[in-house]
Length: 466
Image (cartoon, rainbow, N blue to C red; front, side):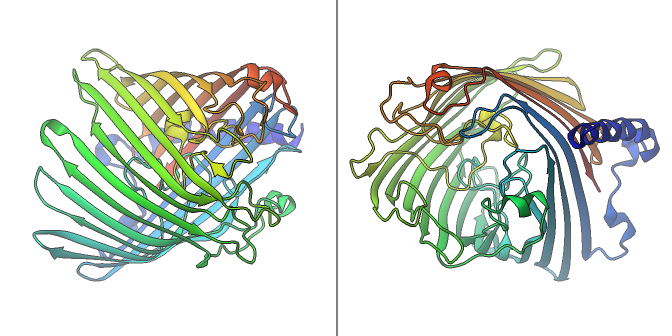
């Protein structure tokens, strides 16, 4: 039995053991077990979260990759807080993200970040102007708005970190207003993607940040009548090459808004988001690439759904996403949209060793059906068709490009499903997912494409929380 097969067997065994052990943890009436229960002081809190996931991908679609990939990934988070005074909290969170893969599987810092200080912060709450002001400073993580541009990653095995200051003011009442502003230095995860051997060894190297990459943002949200929510935001990203961080020297401004009506029984829900992006960027991060391009790009997301008052509480939603691509190389302009530090799993399917689609040079309609057969069981089935927004620009997540446009723009169809079960709510969650990518003309015809046919991706995972 080879290493990847043993890892798969170990994960299956882990899931089976957890399921059989479920009754020993206690009933729902007793509530979930928490590490806090063993701590006598209410001013001290400690939580732990561990996730183990097995992933398998058949028929790679990325440039320079062939065959199948397998990975066993683990992420452990330990978060502690201390409240020395009323309204002041000191916190720290440790992250340990590791991967064990089959030979030839390409690793990046989105998968591996062993033994790292993810957060170390001071959080201050204070009443101000009839509302509540929260100031958080230090090394932090952030979810902003829809999470499409700044997010604390959930499915991904590593999490975006930032060092700086985040301020948020919230008004009271049903017509809640949220005003938020932040200035941070994005954390560079180490070792870098070029150090494949160290990533495979899950080597420990402390992450770092510097003034060469800065991110700031202003976010405003307001609760309207009939459950509507309106958001507006502006983000700025300014970067230059650092000693160990080659960049595309982006100086980007992204401004947009979102109108949201949350899902509810027997109600039409919808979400409309748009963003414009301008500034400067370079085509690559290569040191020899010194030509700055005029950057102008745009993004749109439209979603309309309906939740039926029926068993399994089905919700059916139509979805559409468009993120512009670069129309012509060599013209001194860059039209490819940049998703900054956003998450993409909730729109485009699983990431991990799969993750073929991102919020850049993409044109994709789809439909999603969500179900809840039982209170602790949820699932969905989703279908999307994918085109390149520009057939001359790069399929960003794969490295494939045809500058002539002769390979067409159709990437293929993706069919996906996921089922999630919480046998011990608050303590144990089990999940399984599958995605099938039917290859389109671009995959079949693009220069240097692996062109191996349809791709299959499956994962199983268990999450423990205490």
